[in-house]
Amino acid sequence: MENDNHPKNDVVIIGGGPVGATAALLLTRAGKRVIVLEKSAFPRFHVGESFLPAGFELLKQLGLEEQLSRLPRMTKVGAEFGFGHGKDTSCFDFSESLFDDGYETFNIERAIFDDMMLEAAADAGADVRTEAPVRRIVQLNEGDIAVEVDGNIIEGKCLLDASGQGTVLARHLGSKKIMQHHRKVAYFGHFEQVQRLPGQSEGHPTVAMCDEGWFWLINIDKKRTSIGMVLDSDVARSIDCPTSEMLHWGIQRCPLVRDRTASAVFPDQTHTIADFSYYCRPFAGPGYFLIGDAAFFLDPIFSSGLGLGMEMAVRAAADAEELLAHLDGTHTTNGKKPRRPARIRRDYINYINRSSAPFVTLVNLFYDHSFRELFLHGQGPVNIQPAIISILSGYIFPRISWPLRWRLYLMELFTKIHARVAMVPRRDSHSLCSTQPVPLPLVEAVATSA
Image: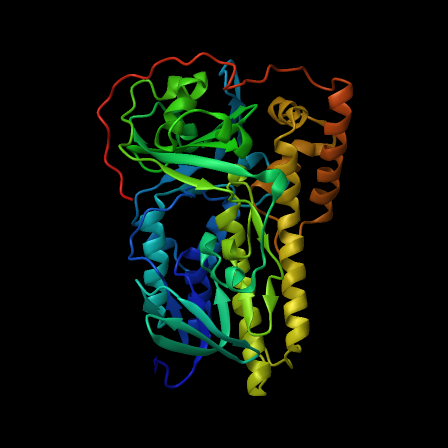
């Protein structure tokens, strides 16, 4: 093997998606020598097309609003939720949040967005290499790390794993743990000519809730809509249907989604992800930080994944910069003496646990029918609904504020009470497995990229 690294890099980043690109952009701007190793050729298909308002604000802080403005996208100012039977749905706007934060964001095709982010990192000076999969973690020590890429050894002082659900470092460490109570399977694809909500609501993602899981409908540009179905793993295994046809199986049994796709052009290919809720603890260790989906992945019901990941990237970049200052015996950019490595790692782990906790709570609540009834009702005492909307907007960094935190606790309590004593009108749930399928119209398929 040959060594591909003279002089040694400051930071090696595995993964060139938006999370890795964000870290690379910030570290390169800080004058660090950064190499990004991405296994795929860009642009490439990826799911996760809906952004939270806090994520849009972060892009502005990164100075990328102008680049974003040149890409086709849909303005998003809220969301629509309803049960799969489609008898009634409820919409909320981000402007109804508890605080006067930014409330506009967007949906976008991830292929072009991810390409924009990686190009920004390269333009800033990062050494970006695509089609460069990391085959092996060679060394992982404080201030001395090395990975193998196609027979070459890439060395550095610090490793950031942003490999997404590939979880390269967690697989090496054996630390990936599936959340057993959230074992899910997702089936998804890009459709055309899907019926949309009128006016400003056109960009609202739609969530159709069912006993067995839920659907998303996300308009990503003027023509295309991302549609996906998330099922409990046990339910998915019990259905006698080929994986490639599961999304059609579900749409046939969900009136809300079936009606929206009555005139739609279906994709000729769908995608599947299984067992995608997991943790990879510890999130940091000697020589490394895990960021984004390489650290953990939650159920995507509230579109929190990319926003959380990019915020983690901002923190990891700052912590990596401070770690490098400690290793080099210098001060941080603000003139302070750097924390010790063990303290940096501990604070980073606490930051992730603290930042993800509100979404973990909401994801757990979402699968409780009582919470769904309370949430769809859209009203409650002490501004509880605006507080939930603020959390769903992503305004929980660097830590969730007390006015939001105690209202989230109260929502948990109300959910338990409502399960026993009705606090709002009851609503019928919808079961896919108990519903007779209605054949879908035969419409010419639209080609999708793999």
